[in-house]
Image (cartoon, rainbow, N blue to C red; front, side, top):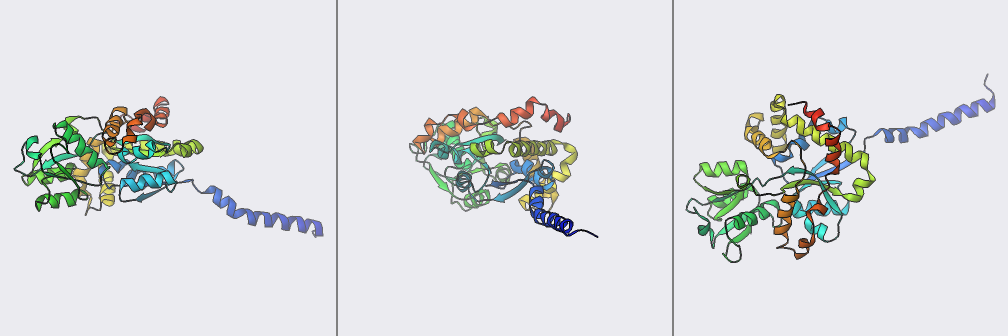
Length: 338
């Protein structure tokens, strides 16, 4: 028979284990990281794949992906600490950086502009655009900056040549505005461009084919948060890179199309074929953010906010997370020669 002191000892041990259970369960949970995406576009495919195929889980990070309409709002949420990572246009970040926010782009999701300047059938030359209405999404976003780049490339200036830039929603809204003659021209992405060209509208300038350096979309985070959580960010970056490898592996084509259909709300995987091709064309196998492309963003955003002119592209970019993986051969490991 147990002595009284032994019973008390066993009871105390039992109570300790019961009390400890919640903390043990809590410690077993994966660290959470909130990732906000501002547009549903094929260049986000590696992120969607990493989430859908549980690659984030494999690397020990509970990634909560949320959709937030508008890059400006996503940037503000990042600065406020409401999210830890933003999949966003750097055009929406550089003004915050100019204002003192220490935010860095650590991965280049889309390193080229996916936009084409599509015009009414009667507009065939740059000169024909003078005095006309050009539709973009929100001012300061990727389509707006792409419009400024396109005008400059064509030798036009919005103010001098009276080109009226208008905020007219996303691709479907801009397409409808063209058809209703509410716009003379619009910045459209790949599939929307093909649709409108097939209807007789004119592709005046394809920015991808023009090979103008442009940093379209990045993964960005606050530097203080990355420094405080190096293991989480290392694992997160590894998972994203493995997501890229999954997308580029042709054996996974059907699975990738299913992920695209799910996230783009398409009726089935067959309807995702064009978006799959777009993703492969737009993504880089080693997704380093580019200094030249970021300089282009800074140049045009400085016209809207003079403070941005003082921001150096090198200050915006932090490639150290990818370089670490590159140096250790991680890219070769996950791509396996495919």
